[in-house]
Amino acid sequence: MNKFQKLIMFLLLVFVVISCKNNSQVSVNENILPSTITIKGDKFIDEQGREIILNGINIVSKNKEEGYIFQSGPELYENLKKWGVNCIRFILIWDGLEPEPGVYNEAYLQEIDKRIQWAEQNDIFVVLDMHQDLFSVKYSDGAPEWATLDEGKPHTEGAIWSDAYMLSEAVQTAFDNFWLNKPASDGVGIQDHYAALWQHVAKRYADNTTVIGYDIMNEPFPGSSGMQSTMVLLSAYGQLHYKLTGEVLTEKQLGDMWSDEKGRMEALKILSNRDNYDFVFSQLFELNRQFEVNHLQKMYQKVSEAIREVDTKHILFLEHSYYSNTGVASSIERTTLADGTPDPLVAYAPHGYDLVTDTDAVANASNERVAYIYDQIKNKGKQLQMPVWLGEWGAFYGNSESVIPVAKNAISLIEEHLFGQAYWSYDPGTENLRYFNVVLVRSYPVAVNGTLLNYKNNFDVKSFEMRWEEDGNNQNSTVIFVPQLSKVSQVSKDQIPNLNIKTIPNGDSGWFIVPPLEKPSQRTINIQFD
Image (cartoon, rainbow, N blue to C red; front, top):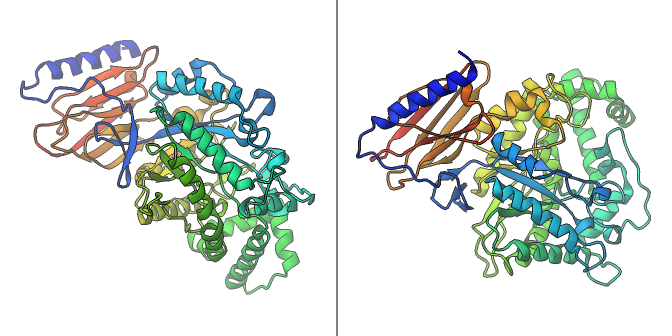
């Protein structure tokens, strides 16, 4: 039996089940997909009160010659829908938005509008992210040169691009002056310009339901205290080395070890142990706390107040500091409204990366380290009582087969913790890579009537299982994305007396639609694939 015949047989089976259903069964709501997203407690929910899992990817161009717009037509967004993407983190570049102090680039915004419209046409939500790497377009991407107050300090690069955070006095000084709100040439503080820019963007999209929120700053870095952080980490590793071997390493030996690729890989093996990793990176907590409390939180509050003057409906996505990407416990808090009450529309938007990211050793990421980082994120989200949206993870780029185990591990943790997520990132041809098709394009709960208890893709046995506690007062269906309908071989009927299918045109993917029962119940579905 070929794939097409199997799909027809499966659909006929479902049709028979539906035709034989009891007439008292609650009818299916035709609007199966969410049309708006907001927050209730620590969950993303839609207009029907269903719990939503945001399953996304980053769409990015850091190329000024491209106008900082990822070059594609609407067909990309059509494909994203077929791959199960229901949200994108769309990268904005400050340099593109405000090329001169207080002058906003309408042409750039119109190109962004066009992409948001394409997303809307494909039932994809958008989070707008103000992106930076190394603060500025002078060194990488982000702030315009007029907002880069580096005081003429030298810029130093390392073996990988992110080493410049630790090495470059220019990058660190530019960050320092941003946090201190030093004035630009027009006399207005750099940070005040940033807040005003966000207000301009938020005013434009205040009534747009496809845009669900604003990621205020990508990977905030503290500035010159980064040098101190480096010394703390080296010292902590020296303590660990002595604890494990009894050997005392000099400061030079420690520096040489981490600057040499072979030495760094040996050190990373030691840090693959969860306890060893915690011993070293937990020693950054106090420095990280000081930055987040004294600078980052204040900036978030300033920007949130600017946004809330023009937009009270969209979600503010708050990232932790750059160092917390590696599992250093974060101290950020919820922003407040003008009257001092907590803003209910705030989400925690961390990034989670292993230490080997952006190196040739990306396929050797440590499962223990990644689990530690994701546990820290889960704990922080619980403390904040916010939904968690992992705004970046992965960065596997052109690697294909070799990173599949690493991708499986990350996805299993994302599913275990019920995180929303946006993979970093889409590039032309990503859809042809094995890890993308084997792991990233997968079944997941799009919208859940009630409380999602757990779900899991077991890639080894090709199955998907999900449990949820249905809300007896909600008559809307639970929706599950299924990537390859033709490969479905069996669907459990445990507490699933009926099932509907909606296919996505011009593809093999679609949604399983589970109408609610008349009485609240804990429900389970298990899908087996060939």
